[in-house]
Image (tube, rainbow, N blue to C red; front, side, top):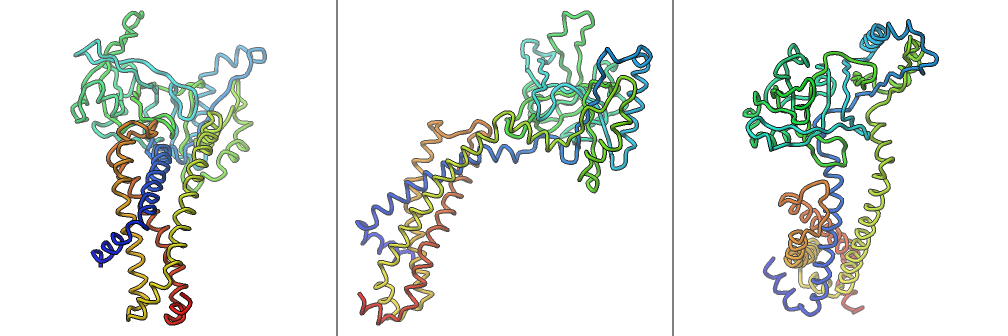
Length: 417
């Protein structure tokens, strides 16, 4: 049947030429729109390297110096430890930790450079987080290689233990075999001229690839130890899944007065999901994405109308051919299958020049790949998605008018023609 359909299309090549060009053009346009959306949504779907679902950010504020008494200042450390333990015992809290440095969904970031001892000129800049040992349980970080030894997660250890992301391990030690990076050492060249230089860090484990926010690329990350929580650090609280709903409101209601202790007060507690939403609005990400998706949707809707109307009109104009095929003994199902396969073959023939044009656009670096790298997998996936959408539109544009046309008796349709 495919050969018969091909010969029929070839015999009607003058009438089909404009349709072939139209399908090739809209295939390229639809592919480009899908590829554009994939650049952003593909990045958002990539794992950040750590799990923020069910995790809340808690900050403890300090009162102005004018209202603080000396006795409160002297027992500040004791008061904070008391409050920290109260949070740990609060109903629904599974685990908590303290950290500072680069904070997700915020402009708080800390960047320094590290170099391997084998090549002191090879400095790799990366984001830093100073964390307590429980951080990795709160954010559910599982090493790709090596293992966290909490008993040795101390700044006083020499060499100081660090955990680094796969990108940093690869950049520093030029190895994608992460087991080879475990146990290697590096140093921070910017600390060499300080009174107490820390020149030796030992890789305890290698973690998955990291990024600060959803709509960003992966970046090198390093984790360094802190031995205890301090009031100026961020406190991350993991809440059990059955207590997440309304947790922040309950915590504020129950603990607001309790945190009014000495120099401290409860500044805020908020889920990381709210931090993400607020940060996307603040950075203009929401408006930018809405504009991008509106343009892509506009082109997609025009493609839909164009292709649907074309095949709808083309099918209605061929009522006589349908009637003749049924009069010659073909069943309605066979006639429908013939017309659907004809439309799909036209699409496949148009896909050849569309593929050439799309590939040249990608090779000329005219696609948007600010967040997700251009690759064979991305190109093939987006192109096949465009073909699948067009195939669906074509089948809809053929099926409905053909179904209505075949409800008329063949003799009546021939008589009308």
